[in-house]
Image (tube, rainbow, N blue to C red; front, side, top):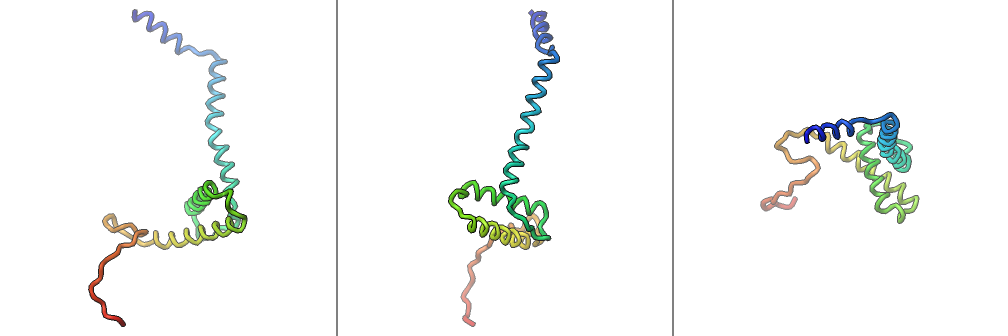
Length: 126
């Protein structure tokens, strides 16, 4: 019984050149498909011609991702002027986030993007 099993495993392991070429080609094509889709979406969302000098590639990636999501959800409903305004707004928001994220915090500090509301005692008007 184990001899039959060993023989089947050996046959399964054998692969000829044509099978190898076919499998290698299909794997290569499958690996390239996501890259082609990413390049296509990059070309569509890269409508930002003039990036601020202080924006890092990470900042640019965040803005592109937010803009791509905005177009995915509302793209058909937005006019060209509204898309332009959305790009400008995203750039302003990213600049604001950069300043907030620049605040040095420790692990036990709350996130710098949250607001802590505290109840104040009686205050006298000024």
